[in-house]
Length: 157
Length: 157
Image (cartoon, rainbow over all chains, first blue to last red; front, side, top):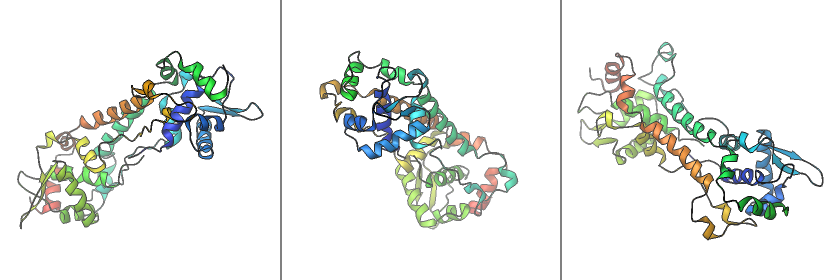
């Protein structure tokens, strides 16, 4: 199982936007240059974060992207699921109901114990990512990081 | 991110083999009929479980597959990783070191905090799957399940 390559892009872009001063924005082109990424594809992926309520996009000469909520209210899970969706990597096709060993529909009213255990593991993964906010990521960076990010990303001090 | 469809196959096949009497085996053809699965592809996947030390394969007229270890010593994680490998779904390509915002190699001696958090989530998923053994799965089945599985899978009582 693989997450899309753009998962790394959007985690980093959101982390960079979280270091801007309130009200400041960065464009898709600026973010693409900052990380040397393909601008058109990145722009499309940033829209996924807008749809997920993580970023907001403003238009106009000073337009661009910024966080839609405080960094303390944006979790890594929200970003990852905006990119890749919310479904579990395990797909249960109910093979217990087919073939010579088929169980009757009556015996399958409860979910398969194997599917339940796979769902529990996915939930453990989700809880782990939901436990970290962008604010905690920023707090772990060296103090010199935010001013440099602002300077190199948007030219702002 | 998606696990292979065969993940469900192998979790169920291992669960069925765990219900056989000690020393009994089932062939790939028997398992394929039991779950109505493509026999050749299933046989190939069962070999992955042999390589992982979950199953052992015996040849000869009464040959087939059986658990290589007691069911209490085989976890769901071992089966899932035999199918899909052990790598994390998140790939860190170190984009922090490229583009206008590039950090110097010196600043990147420690792993990226985002990669660390993604690795923690993968470890939470692995721990969840490692916490359940096949013996616990069997214990959750109704008492009528093992005799029926043996009868329908191998014809044994």
